[in-house]
Every structure is written in structure tokens, then in C-alpha cells.
Image 1 (cartoon, rainbow, N blue to C red):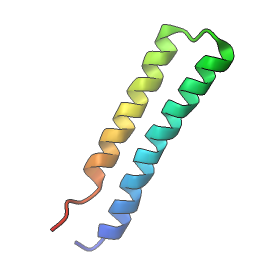
Image 2 (cartoon, one colour):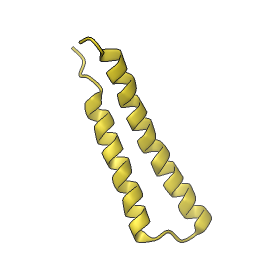
Image 3 (cartoon, helix red, strand yellow):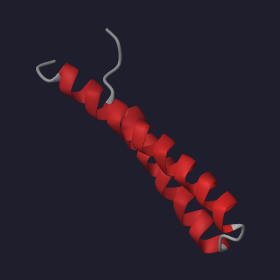
Image 4 (cartoon, helix red, strand yellow):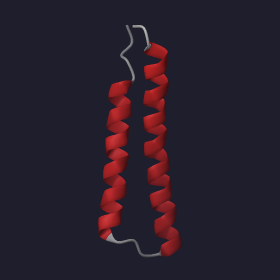
Length: 62
């Protein structure tokens, strides 16, 4: 595959974004002590979507 390394790095980036979003959501929840349910669901949904995109972007091993 021509761009295997680029796909691998892009996939890692999407997975890192998912980790950062979850981390920010957890820290934000502790600092504000009250997070609306809609915001928590939105953060979780975006993190899951980012993880799935990253998972399918990384090419399978040959």
C-alpha cells in the first residue's frame, strides 16, 4: 500500500483525539461539579466516533 505509514499515523491521531476528548470531559466534570447530560453524551459520542474512524483508518497487518 502506497500510503500505509500515513494511514497508520492518521489512525493513531484519531485514537489520541478520542483519548483527549474523554480526558477533557472527565476533568471538566470534576472541575465544574455539574455537567449537563447532553454535554456528557455529546463528548462520549464524539470520542467513540473518533476512535472508530481511527480504528478503521489504520491498515491491517499483512
